[in-house]
Image (cartoon, rainbow, N blue to C red; front, side, top):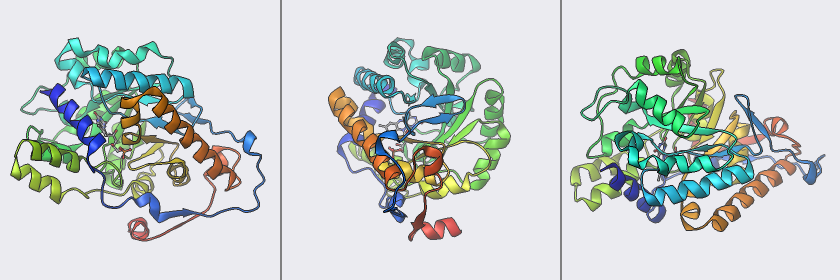
Length: 347
Ligand SMILES: Cc1cc2nc3c(=O)[nH]c(=O)nc-3n(C[C@H](O)[C@H](O)[C@H](O)COP(=O)(O)O)c2cc1C
C-alpha cells in the first residue's frame, strides 16, 4: 500500500502540474548593486546549521524511499550530497518500519559521505490513528538506519485530509513531540502549507531544534492527492484536493512568522539560486528544495549535477550582484516586497 502510494507520488510530482497557483518568491525583488565590492571567485557560500558545516546554503529536502525507483533516486541524491557537501533528507521512513525489507531503499545513502543526513517521520503517525502508531523503538530504528544527525517530524495534516487513507487525529501531537525532542534533535517541517507564528511558538516550547517552514508556493500536496483521487475515481477527495490546492501560508511569510529564535530552513517553492538567496535574506539559516531535484535524480546523475551547478552559479551571481562575499553579508542585502506577499507580511 505504502509502496504503491510512493510510486504514485513520484509519477504525479514528475509529470503533472502540482504547484500552487502563485509562487510568492516572485513577490520579492532583490535590489541590484551596480557597484559591487566583491571578487566573484572569492565568494564563500558556506553555512553553519546547528554545528554542521555545509558548502552551500541549500539542502535536499525529504522526498522518497520504499521502492526500487526511490532507492535509485536516493542514491543519486546522496551522491550529489557528498559531491557538493550539502545536507540530505529522505522521505517518510514509515515504509521501513512497516516492512524492514524496504530498509535498503533508505540506507543506500550510507554509501556516501554526506555531511548530515535527516531522518523523516510523520507527525500524524506519532499519535493514535486507525493505522499503526510509531513507537520509540521505531524511531530509534529509522534514526540509526541512515546514521542521521537530525530527526525531521513532518506536519502534513492537509495531505492526510485529502488522502483516502489519511489519518484524521491531531490531538496530543505536541505532547508526543515534546517527548521525542527530549531524546533526538528534532526539526519540525511542514510539507507545503507553512507554519504560523502560534505553531512556531508551540514547536519551540516543545523543544524542537529548528523549523523547516515548508510553505505555500511550490509543491501542493492537495494537488498531488487530487491526481491520486482522480486515478482511483474518488470524486469526494478530488473535490477536497481542488478546494485546498492553494491553502497555506506563503513560504516567505512563514519564515517571518517563525522568527522565534530558532534556526530556520526556508523551503516551499524554491526553483533557483535567486529563490535560495531570498530565503536567506528573509531570515533562513539554510534553504531546502524537493521537487526541483526529483525528475533529474530519477533521470540521471548528470542531469542532477547540471541542475545543482546552475543553482550554485545562480546563488553566487546573486551574491556578486548584491555585493555579498559570504552568506552573512547576503542576509543584509536589500529587497522590496510586492503584493500579495506584502499583505501577508503586514498581517
Ligand atoms: C514526491 C514527493 C514526496 C515527498 N515526500 C515527503 C516525505 O515523505 N516527507 C516529508 O517531510 N516531505 C515530503 N515531501 C515534501 C517536500 O519535502 C517539501 O516540503 C515540499 O515538496 C515543498 O517543497 P518543494 O516546493 O521544493 O517541492 C515530498 C515531496 C515530493 C515532491
